Length: 163
Image 1 (cartoon, rainbow, N blue to C red):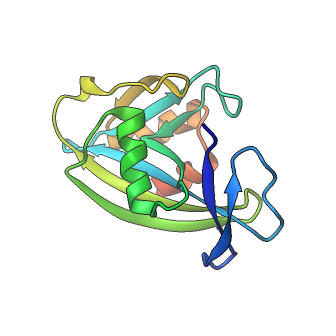
Image 2: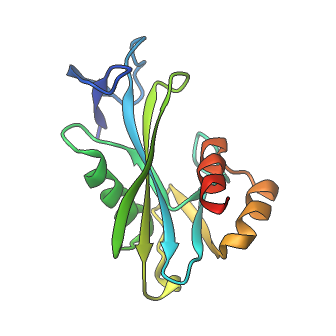
């Protein structure tokens, strides 16, 4: 099934047409993505490893879940959908951390933090997307992201939480 996104301008105003995953995004236009940092009620942070079969960044670790916001979806709905699809977790709470625009990636990023409770071993993997996970205490996160492949933008978000 083809994934379709709303188009946005630099200022996050929605444009009257759609974008299709895999097709070139016209210059000056953007799509919207969400990243969901998952924190357990005990304070540990969840990192998911991207599948070795991913075409982009195989084997990279990323916090929690994330992906593109589908056409007709808002950012919060997409964050909750991605969290459920990629981890099987249901949050006790959710909050918006930061909104960032990457002109290079032609993407607006919304970063959320969720808090979950319950059994940490219940994390599930989305076939073709993720193949491993680790829960880390906050004090171990800096060493982990320094010694494992992780996304620079997520390192920045994690740095602001730790400092």
